Length: 254
Image 1 (cartoon, rainbow, N blue to C red):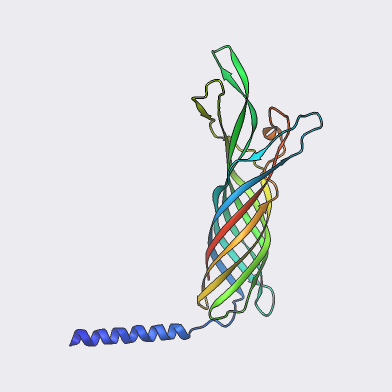
Image 2 (image 1 turned 90 degrees about the vertical axis):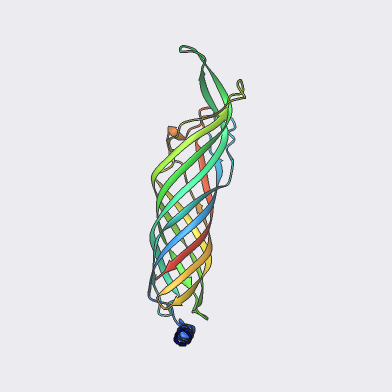
């Protein structure tokens, strides 16, 4: 009997808590939000080039779509009385992985004193880590049954903190071998600007706790630095590329 009474009390308490939670609705947005977000990304390079008049045609192609991520902390500050427009910023870490295909020249040693040079189709892989500072505008609708729709637009200011590149190719004289060079210093620029926009929604568990999900698109306007490291050794043309990204954004806001 005691166990039965305890079970009834427990179920009653659970029902009361559930009813209280059900009646706890969010009627307005806050003035300030702090958030933590994680965004798996799908990235692809869109190459272009500007060879000098004396160089022959240079073909630079995207090889594959690659996966990366963006993660960090975010801050939203209300700008207007209705609490629907916010200034958005934060500190994010971005890992970018991508590759480009082109013809490159390599030296192969046949002995200690002799070698031959060969032009070969090459895939160069770039791995880069950035600190990204977003600055943008975020629009939040008035909460409806604890759901809020969100739109945003702005810029990522990317600062490179690490980067490597490596080549993959095969020697046409020895096709049974595939070669991959050791990772070397990347030709990525120290600073890269990107634009972004996105749509999503937030669900408010309480006035101070929300979970969010959405889809963002961003375009990084530059990747390569200016210098000999980014000059093709066959055509003498400079590598140039922009980067497109799709991001699945998941976050928690307080």
